[in-house]
View 1 (cartoon, rainbow, N blue to C red):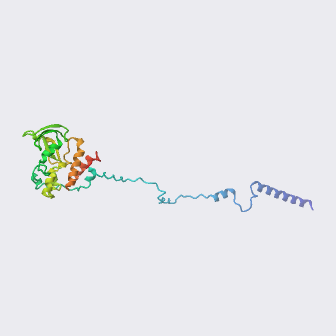
View 2: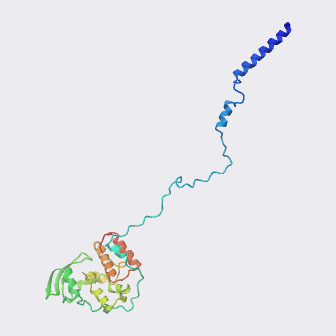
View 3: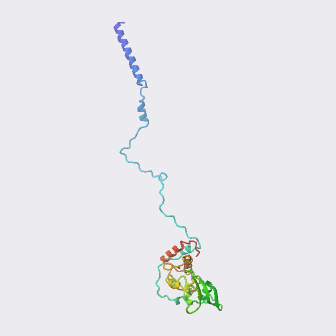
Length: 266
């Protein structure tokens, strides 16, 4: 072999070695076809751009949506059975009928002896409501002491032309009010029973009874607030017993009074 050719051969070998060493230093020994590490990472978890896209509609899954508190009010509990409030719910509500045709005689003779015990109704109530009474015979009340439920005053009653009116017998449901809320549709005998029914009658302070007139619960209540629940409950019981009705204003007033004593018996 010639000396010149030997130089070319050794020069080629040296160049080949340099190429191999350079490729090894830069990871060129990786199998052909494998992507670079940086490329592999980008293909394993690609990033998707959302720019310009319409946002997805919210899920309609009821489990995925937050609950919205209800704005409705829970229904009120029904009044307890046997209470005045419960009985009031059974009474019809209507407008007041005209007073046309009303007179006291539409309710029979004043203070008739409807229970046939030999005593008129006025004396029956005086005997029931007064204490320390004195009688003439078995019926007529001559004197007694009244603890007035309407005013809480103590009244010393003495029968006489100028003194008897100090204590009067009140129709808790006034007869005129009864006439305008259904009593005109009752028979004459039934109206007489209403006018003499002991549960609708109270011995009370005369002037206070005069001030009441024929007012209903919407226009008049006893000055003694502690007695109002019982007073209104009595009106409700009487109206229910005789199939009378109440006006809207009357019912509202009764409900307001009984809201302070919801368990008041009828």
